[in-house]
Image 1: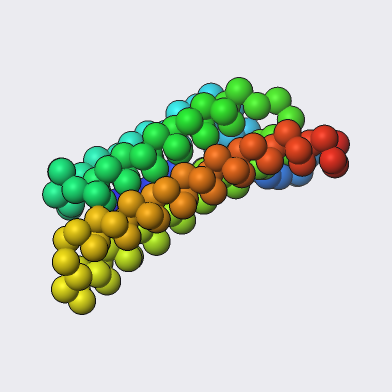
Image 2 (image 1 turned 30 degrees about the horizontal axis):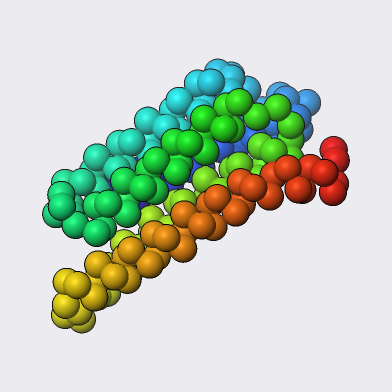
Length: 155
């Protein structure tokens, strides 16, 4: 499930060097199908990964809530990426989405380690909630930096 979400994240790497890919005739998904299709396919991968994760975790748990929040952040990021109009804004938005992918992997790993080690459920929920709050803050802060980065270093 996490791998499927990483496929969605990986599709966004083509935004980084779209000019060079176009100049040298590379036939990336982004160049062949455009921004909308790339963001839509990425969103489909994120949603598919979330659905697969939903089958693996208890539906009413801190982990399920955290993953739902991460999915919402990723989808918001994809929408913002689709609507972006500048290279720096694109790159910052992709960075924010990438942080969400890392958040999913780190949160899942923390959950698995705590489960194996026999942490009480309340403790697990607290750690997962703290991780989710931290990573949502990182996502929001990264997105907020788009305007500052553009203002400091216009392209």
